[in-house]
Length: 299
Ligand code: HPA
Image 1 (cartoon, rainbow, N blue to C red):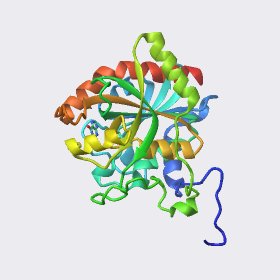
Image 2: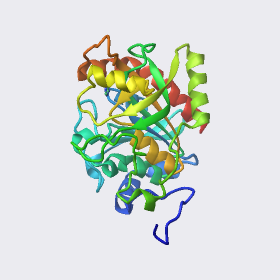
Image 3: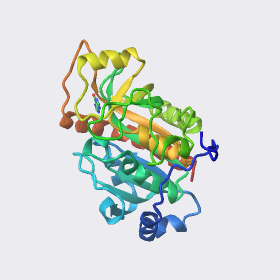
Image 4: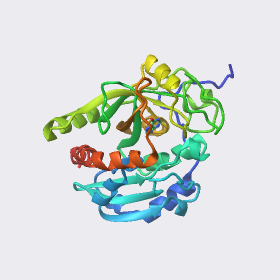
């Protein structure tokens, strides 16, 4: 073991992105003027509608920020939307980056790392997911209270089964302080606000374990059976790197999935990307209520 090996309490996993950060900050004076720290939101497939609720929005395409990759997936706009929601400054990522688009994990997590850099205090990460838990229905909202990642760092690389997973920097895991840390991240306060909101508005918020895979194909029946057997409730192609990146930077974070299709081995239902987008549109109002409640809490 190298002499300078150490386990910092909070690792510093972020690569130097001062140029990207300065470019983003220059475009959003509104965030600097507010007495409250901004809330961050990642809007997953088909969930970009929440961006329309942001008041006095400033739209910043990722391509205008040096060092950020463009989003190419359908239903992902590839823009930061900055403004206010429920009197709280907010920065939303309308569209995310995925490993299946050919992006590296540092690229996938960089927009979130930038949001942490500009000072968000909380982050809500939303996503579409397949429901592996047979008690789930299409359209359910599920709070991700546990996760596991099989995301390989390179497109085409075999999944890294149980590799403790995402070091969002390109530094070796030990150097970044990830070694032997148990990376479980669901902020209890945000969890509670989300559940209270669901109760107040009369909809159900389920809980589940999210398994992240490379995609872009959906799972075979054999894979669904295996994943369920391993305890996963949800399967999707994103979210875990973003949650880890934000929470390791000290941002209180929760992930919420919309079940867009059932990934049940014995009742296989084929879902295409258009179905996924349509179900998400229908779930967007409920998600928005949760985001509003979290915004109000911090305002
Ligand atoms: N598998 C993986 N990712 C997904 C799914 C799925 O069934 N549905 C939405 N995203």
